[in-house]
Each structure stands twice: as structure tokens, then as C-alpha cells.
Length: 488
Image (tube, rainbow, N blue to C red; front, side, top):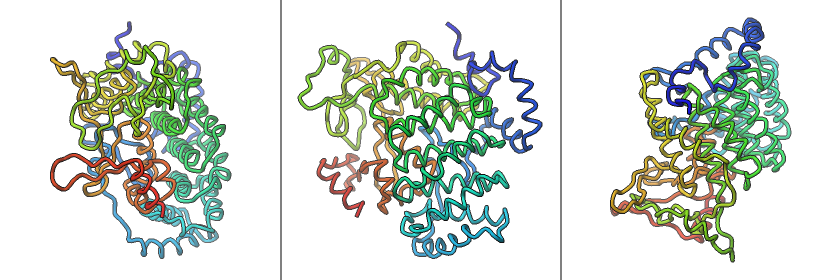
């Protein structure tokens, strides 16, 4: 067996080894393409392929789309909040400015788009843009088509995604998906390609696309992943491949049955585990965990438990669990999770690769990336070993009882309010929301944004103030009542 750990450390490629046989034949065409592309795109291609230093900040301004790792996803992020009344007044004038392009400049449009993103990220402004959606999308489409500047185009793509989260119906997808997908394929800018991929995922998820359309976009994203970006003329570009991985996982949470696609998808994701970029590796690993998780589904009413299924059930989680008494092998309603199909034909190979990343070491990897790889892939390995077990910080085994224990992932979202992320589909949906809304997803949640509530159905629990550290788990009826209150 190849030394996968050494291979991951010493690889000079941004993504996987799969393209090594293609590189020689593509070298001349890539060089010619680089000469014809903008200088900013070439610089972006070079910069993204290296690991950041320990002191570098990988987060940028409102154009940033990438999600952080499981451990530091929410660490230290604060966003300036505009009061609702002020935002409503500001938005009214802003819509006029965006839709009237006659005397606008590139710099002016960049400022207007940035302000639009800030306002829609901060509050649920569905009423504010009601009646103006078509005009706004037409203005965004012009900015995307013309690509007058990389920043304007990227901001316009982000504005399209935010519009999809804010407004109801399938208008955004119907009017924009063709242009957005074409931009991902044909743009000469690598950052614009990545932004277009993220935009495509957002409008596909939030605009109510049917199952056929959803699977079509997932196939497109998998082509990008399998080809290491060559499919959209972004060879070995980590940002584009990471975007495709993240959005594939986001859309896959909407698919009830992945049996027909699971094996091919895991094959492509496993290739990406050999990337030299930690972001690519983590996104690929999370998708693998999701595929294994989805190979199990709740026991149906009247369905008997298979004999061999009982043998697979490991001891329930017994560690600190301050928000719930639901066990690993049950869903949110307490139904037993039963295996429906094999997620992949060679799980042992997957486990070996994932385990090597959970313990990877070496001077070629900076400390932050190493910590992220260790914590994320330990959690991913837990799920592959037992797909009933969702994201966890860590796993250990009691030497006497042989029981698994660890700390499940919870997220503090407001004061003493926490969201439990005990399933990968919940984690990937939250990550998808955060890519579009940033920290503003909390206000959208409590302001009753229907897209956000549908994406993450009521999973908010308040800790007792008495200091016991244990949450009162709401009843099913209570969760429905809370959802009704939030929806108004």
C-alpha cells in the first residue's frame, strides 16, 4: 500500500494525483491560457496552491465564500449589525441605485453591491425587495456578463445568492442558473469561477429546484471534482475544487436516497483526500461522512429490525451531552437508524486513508491546518466506522467498558441558545447558510426567514439558567409550535 501520509505531505500538486497523466499533454495549453488570462487570475492560481502560514488569516471580506473547519468555524467572528429600520430605508434607495446603471461606474457598482450584501446578510428583507426581484437580477446579470472587474462580478454573484435566500419561489434559479453555470465554466478569472460555483449551489438549494434539476447540478459539480477543475478550465485550482465539494455536499443533504450515486461520489472524494490543500481534504472528507450517514435511514413504522443490524449497533454515546438524550443510533424523533445499502464497496480502504489524515504530521503542514485535519478527520472516521454516529470533536474508548465517548458538536448562536449538530446533514446545511449569510444567519433564523427555517428546522435549545448544564429537550409538539411562532 502506498504511504498515503507521505504522499499527502510531499505532493507538489494542489489537488489529487489523478491528473498526473494528463499534465504533460495539458502543459502547453495551460501555459497559453495563462498568457491570455488576466494577471490577477494567474496570481490567484499561484497563491491558492500553497498553504498559508500560521499567522496568515484565510478569511477575507464579503467576497469570501469558503467555510472554516469544524473546530474554528465560529471562532472569533463578529459582524456589524445595521438596525432594521435603518436597513429598510437604506435598501429602498439602494435598489434604485443598483437598477439604474446609466451613469454608474465600476467603483460605484462595487460599493452598491457590497452594501446590498451587507443589508441582506444582516436582516430578512423579503418585503424590502418584493416587487423588485426581476429588476435586481437583471442588474446583477449585467455585472456578471460584462465582468468589468473581478470584484464587481464576484459581489454580483454573492448578491444573486442572497436574493435566492431572501425571496420565495423559483424565480432566481429560473432566471440565473444558466448564466451562473456558464460563468463558472467560461470566466477567465479563477476567483469568479469559485464564486459562481458557490452561487450555483445556493440558488439550486434555496430556489426550490426539483429533484431532476438538483441532481443535474450535482453531476456538474462532481465533474469539476473528478477532473481536478479541468472540466471548467481551472486545472488544479483548490478554490474551485473546494467550492464544488462544499456545494455538492450542501445539495446532497436534500437528496433522500444517494444509493445510485454514492460509490462514484466517494471514489472522487477519496482522490481529493490526497490533495496538498487542507480545505480540499476536509470538504472531501465531510462529503464521505455524509454519504455513509445517508446509507442509514430511520426504521419505518411496522418494520422489523434486521438480525444483522443488531450486531452492528455499538454502545450508545455516554459522554457529555448537555442538550439531548437521543442516542447515536436514533434520529431526532427517536426512530432506530437502519442500514439500507453499502455506501462504498471498500470501506476498509477509506478508513485507512482517513485514519492517516487524522494522525498526519510533518513540517510541510502548518500548525493550523494540522489541527484542522486531526480534529475533522477523527470525527469523519467515527462516522465511517459507525454511520449512526454524527460529528464529534473526538472519540475515545473506555478501557473497562469499551464504550465510545467524546464531545458532540454544539454551536452557541445567541446568548444561552445552542444548536445541536449531531448529524452531518445539519452541519453541512449550517455551513451552506454561513457561506451565504455569514453570522447574519442567526438574525434571519429569528426573524422568520422561511428559507433558513426550512434549511435548518427547529434545532435550537436553551440551557437552564440554574447551572445544571443540561438542556430541556423540547417535545415534538413543542418543536412544531416553535416553528409556527418563528414563521409567524
